[in-house]
Image 1 (cartoon, one colour):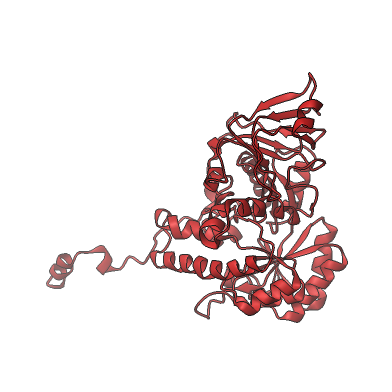
Image 2 (cartoon, helix red, strand yellow):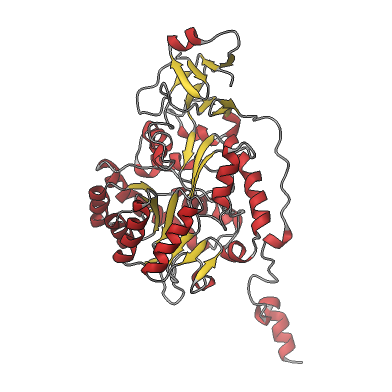
Length: 450
């Protein structure tokens, strides 16, 4: 493998240390071989050279919450009822390239359709598919009340990305089955939307069930991530031993204390809510929901700021894979939202998206920082993310992506994807065509006298 010297740039190494202008980085045999004067001295005639003068050199981004196998559905009906396994596999491989070109060199894809996540991970590692380094889960574990799809979820068995587990024995067997087939993480949907209950998601697992999952997974050296969209779920997930908590919506002080005491990590995933709140009107989101999404961000972020001050480790995640978070488009927005809503500095947000993300990859001390001996995942950015972290969302400013010591082709166009008709729900109407809607008052009045 060729060595690469990145010279003249300002190094932001992902550890939280101050930026270092004019520092060289040498990547050799897939790892960071040297920095500073030693990097220049270690280069030879065969070393490729990347001029980073006036640019920022930093670790590749780590997105700790993606759904690369989902195919960007507009809603649950598409996701659960309009996806085939073989086509979804090919679409996932197609999409993986977009992630890498966005500057994301590693992702955690914690739940998937069928077992595509693990297979995609292995295909990338084997060099068959170009994409980010992956850690993957299987189907999300649910009770029959879990998740956001309500009654679309069967009372037992697997529906789309969800497997309903009933009773301790079924939970244990499903976890063992998933681990047998290669998952890195087990995911639990701790909250769900119940159609007969108005309001936000409710906790649909009890703490003994959560402990069963965590104990079983941990005994087999596998970590657990949980979808928690109310305070009770965050509290109980932490107490049960969940390693990484997604969302943590509306958490209260008791939940924060539980997270701190347990040493759990958090990935709020504001990006999906932020896209809906800020741009939902452009894509047809119900207007009454826009303020709801924004309020959830603001209320949750205020509490998560306390958790950050208390020392909780935060990771960034975009929930890429839905129509509102299409692949390759929004991976870096979470950094902006950490700065805007949680008051993090740009440096703190970068650490969350690099060094801290190594936890999701189960590669702490291996990825996420530019230090000698670390894996050679490097970005060169035409701009200063410490001044404006939003620059990381501009793909035109990502001028070099190096993953494991290999430079990524950012120039050759990816063929345009055409939507397969069978993957989308086709509506005859968005609402009932009543006479009062179809006809004017004048027409109705005239017809009443016929």
